[in-house]
Image 1 (cartoon, one colour):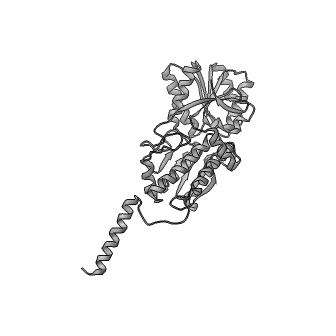
Image 2: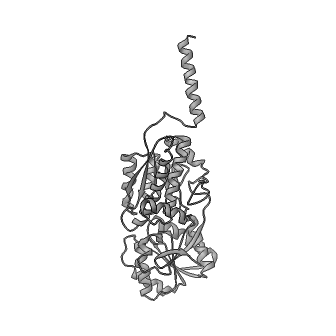
Length: 369
């Protein structure tokens, strides 16, 4: 064996040892780490997108100020998905044109139902930051959810209505998209199993501007609670028309109502909503506002954690998609703002998730008593 062959063998062993020691596969990549963000930056849920962008920007700044990920700076690529099914174009652009290393979003299940298959087909490491319809993550593959699944939220809402509100006859008016249907399909049978009765159960289009025919039926059914898993614009219309018709019972919606579009509408006073029990402390809000000027809702910490999780995984595993996905599947993250402990189950959903109930008071969502 000549000296040239010996040195080649030695070099291979050294390089192989470095790769094994670092836990990273593939060639060393340089340049920025690019993370795409699919969020509603316009439309009826623009305040959701505003908070997601603000949370992501804070995480980006903190990572880059600390030296980046192995010296590589994080760049964010924002695409507006408008919180509507046509927003699939945002994910298509990210996957096919922008080609980031990973994506956070979508925020809205109405977009995610169409967009997530695009990310899945591309094998794009993706953490959804609000989209929560049951089965959206659907792993094990490249799709994960940083916000609790509605398979849990629907049950929580049913139990709250039955046990805390004393509801026995409930009317359900839901938005006919992945989110609204997903919640309705969990809520209604679970409420019935508790001993309650669903006296009205009907969906309306996300674009509906008049629900008076449904309101007439609801009033006739005489429920003691109305459950409205509706998006913001639809909820404003429904609540106003319910009140105008004299339906003065408790109304409870889902986490789609946390945005300013509903809270500041002037019609939501007293309306209840279920939402993930997301950490959004005054200290965190102050950091977000100091950087972006935004008063963040609960989606800001979800987006913040998603960016931080990608940075942590890529620091350990590198940026090769398969390695990032493997890192997410074995994740045990203890530095979360949204949730103190984060890991994903075999479906890509959060393993541990809790909910709370808030009420609209003075144009703000505050804890319900």
